[in-house]
Amino acid sequence: MLEDRLRNVRANTPLVHNITNYVTVNDVANAILAIGASPIMSDEPEDVEDITSICGGLNINIGTLNKNSIEGMRRAGRRANELGHVVLLDPVGAGASRLRTETAASLMDELELTAVRGNVSELKALATGSTTTQGVDANEADAVTDENLDQMVEFAKSYAKTAGCIIAITGAIDLVADSEKCYVIRNGRKEMSSITGTGCQLSGVMTAYLVANPDNRLEAAAAAVCAMGLAGEIGWSHMQEGDGNSTYRNRIIDALYNMTPETLKEGAKFEVR
Image (cartoon, rainbow, N blue to C red; front, side):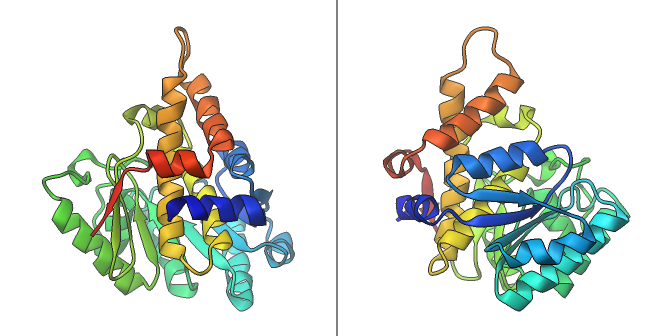
């Protein structure tokens, strides 16, 4: 039951260590707080092992890479693995540059990941060597559609098996899969793409859901995706004349803050394949 995954987040207040990009760090922290979890931000290599030790999960986002932060990601990831903590990778812009692609691939090789969350172009770049990423956005030619849905569901399951972790492909239609089961999720608004960082926020939120729900992590990841998309729908419904993307960003975070298990149960739009 997806609503139980939200209940567990609010009941357990998971502490999430985020090594995330500088463009969206404040929004990621606020989104995590909005769902009832608690964020810590640190990418300094001399600091990250201590910080991740006191957390339940680690969210690694490669959106603004530098040599210092890459070393921090490796150190934090290794320490999180030693402690058996949740580790999520958000391979922002994989396929757009050699550094991003190689860093994401090496983190996947070196670390035991609980989940990888990205857009379809980023995940295709890592899975197949495709390089159709447009900056940090998915190429329209890669989009998950009703026409290619069966093929993309199989891709998500196959990549989850190869990677040994949950794969979350987010876009107009979201796919959250392990090697045997895939949630096909249709929550969200196209206007969410006008805001920098909704994907980054989702990665932090998903990490918290995974920490709070150790016995059903696939459903937890799906619940996080549904909740974020539903927050986009609710936030949009509250927009007023003169509001723009800055207001929309705040309304999405407010919707996460005010979301109840009952709201999630009633508003989640998904099927399982």
